[in-house]
Image (cartoon, rainbow, N blue to C red):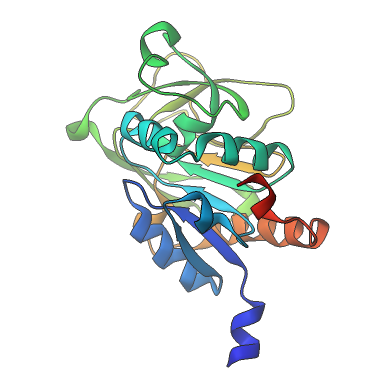
Length: 225
């Protein structure tokens, strides 16, 4: 049993606010080890980090308050895998629409080359669910849950689009309706896979973590703390 536990990939879940417990449960179901991260010391030994959905302004302030912002940014610049859902996607984006208003409240980590719109579909009452085609995780559609969701408006040349709302979606907003992308070791989705029983996206992120662990086996997270 001890040998088996040592083989489990430790994945950090930012546990300051939002749906971190649901992510932790999903991570454990994949066979990886979920590590709740609230302080810099909690990052020691983890091979990837999930930033959950929640309230992006609150999470941003808490990241600064607990001295996590610069540590996470520095780790990401070294190839450390990150996965942001909903609010996590907002925090990882390089540009927020109407930035003069939004960035005064949200201190973005500015790590993935996308422009996003917060609350693009409306407030809580406008939450919705939709079947998404996402070929990187398989042929079967993914049942996506959108709650006060952001939308990706633009992507940089190094960003790979993974999923968009279908043309016949009831949410026919102007322009592209991109809801999942990746750039290197960073993955973001506008929806909440942790609220479903489908583990395919978490497993997809785990493959990034495993790749990073193989390439950076000698990385000491503690050196950033």
